[in-house]
Amino acid sequence: MSDTVFDRYQARRTRKYLRHQEQTAHWLPGWRTHSRRRLLVVLMGVVFAAMIAAGVATAFAPGAGVLAFAALCVVFIPVWTTLQIVSERGDSPTGALDERELAQRNEARSLALTITQTLTLVPTFYLYLGSQWSSMDGTTLAASGSILVLACLLIGGCSATAVLAWTRPDPDPEDDTDTYRKGTA
Image (cartoon, rainbow, N blue to C red; front, side):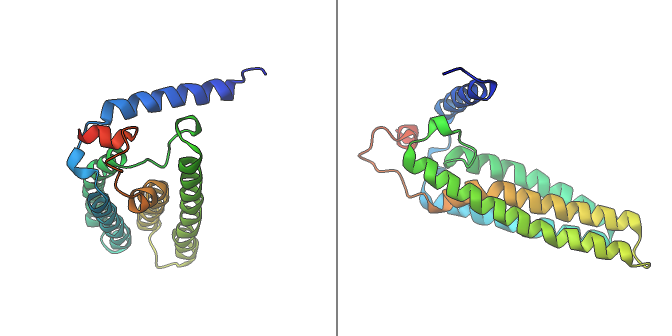
């Protein structure tokens, strides 16, 4: 069997992912519980709702909406990074997962794709319909629509990890092979 470019890429990605997992296994041990992961998911949901509100607000007050969205991005980054560290990420490569984890990841990714496609339809129609209204300023429409599209893409892109973080139970204290348990030792 010949080694394709894709196979080499996947092997490199798996090595890099496992190295990163090993490096972060001891980080934030108090946040690796089920309730704390759910808190992070809820916080991300609040940030996403505020991002959508900022996109809508941009249609009426462009400067304030854009500034609010920028501030929300600053809040989003540490929340998202923390969630990725303390949970099973939705972007785990196939080589780093067992069969059960792979099935869960694939199911979460499938849901995330559906969420992305469905949510992004809303700002797409908004942009199309807004372009038909003569009373709508093109620059304001573009700024507002761009923020809404970006918020929808962020929601969809984060959905797989959020679903896994929400549904994954606390690690079994008896399971010494669990990376997360090792991180709390």
